[in-house]
Amino acid sequence: MIGIFDSGVGGLSVYREIRKLLPQEDYVYYADNAHCPYGEKTKEYITGRAREISEILIGKGADIIVVACNTATAAAIADLRKEFSDTDDPDVRARMLELTGGKRDHIKFVGMEPAIKPAIKMTETGVVGVLATAGTLKAEKYRHTRDQSHGNVTVVEHIGQGFVELVENGTVSGPEAEQVVAKSLKPLLDEGADTIVLGCTHYPFLMDVIRKIAGPEVTIIDPAPAVARHLADILEDERKVSANMSGKDSASGTGCSVFMSSGPDDVLKKMVCRL
Ligand code: DGL
Image 1 (cartoon, helix red, strand yellow):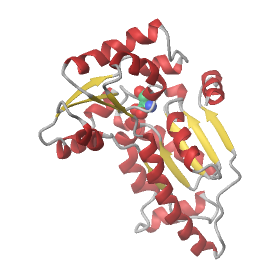
Image 2 (cartoon, rainbow, N blue to C red; image 1 turned 60 degrees about the horizontal axis):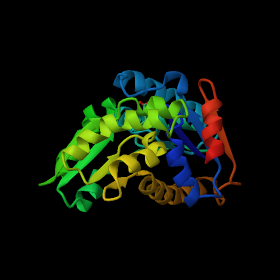
Image 3 (cartoon, protein in one colour; image 1 turned 60 degrees about the vertical axis):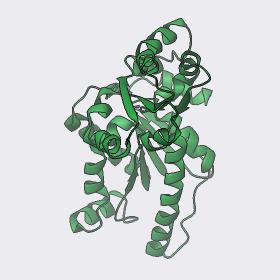
Image 4 (cartoon, rainbow, N blue to C red; image 1 turned 135 degrees about the vertical axis):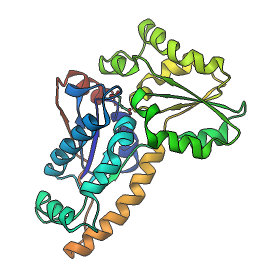
C-alpha cells in the first residue's frame, strides 16, 4: 500500500499522477488540513507533523510513503529517512519491524523535487520562474538544487501568496482566484520568465487560472508526473526486497484508495470527487 500525505488537498495532484501510472496499487492519503498551511511553519513543527503522519500511514499498512508536499519534503524528508529508512541502524530496523508487525525493517520515502533542472533546459528567454511556499523557497534543499543547476539561467522566485488558502477553500477558478494568482505570477512574467515551475502541490489545482494569466507561450511545469515515475521505479525495487524477506511474491493491490484528514473533510471529498 502506498501512503501519501500533504498539509491538505494539494497532494491529490500527485496522487492523481501516481494512480494513473499504478492503478492496481492500494492507497492511503492523509490530508493534514487541521495544521494547514505548512508554508510559514518552522522546520521542527513540520518535521513533527510528518513523523506523526508517517506512523499513522504505516499503521494503516503503507509500505512506502510519498511526501506529496514540497514544503514538508524540504523541511523533513532527511529526518524521516534517518528515522524510518536507515537499515544500517539496528534501532531503526527494530522499530520498523515493530511498527509494521514484522513485515518490513524500513520504510522508504519519496519526496517532491523542485523541477528547476527541466525548466532550465526548456527556457528560451533564460529566465525561469518558481512559485512555491515561503518554507520551500528558504529551505536549504531547494536553494542547493537551484544553486547547483541554474548556470547562466536566471531563476526568479515568488511565494504563491494565498494560493493554498484558495485551493483549501475549493476556489480554483473565478475572479477571486484570478486576482490572487495574478499578484504572485505577474512579477515573474514581468521579469521575462517563459517557464514557470509549480513548486507547491496545491498550485496545479489552479492550473487553468495560471494558464489564463500566463498565456499560451509560457511553459508551466508540474513536477508530479516525474515524481510518479520515480516512485514506480523505487516501488519495483522495494517489492523485490519484500518478496525476498517474506519468501513470496509481494503483489500490488486491488486499486483501492482510502482518504483521511486531521480536520473537516468536505473539501477533501469535493476534490476527490472532482478527480
Ligand atoms: N502543498 C504544499 C507544498 O507542496 C504545502 C502548502 C502549505 O501547506 O503551505 O508545499
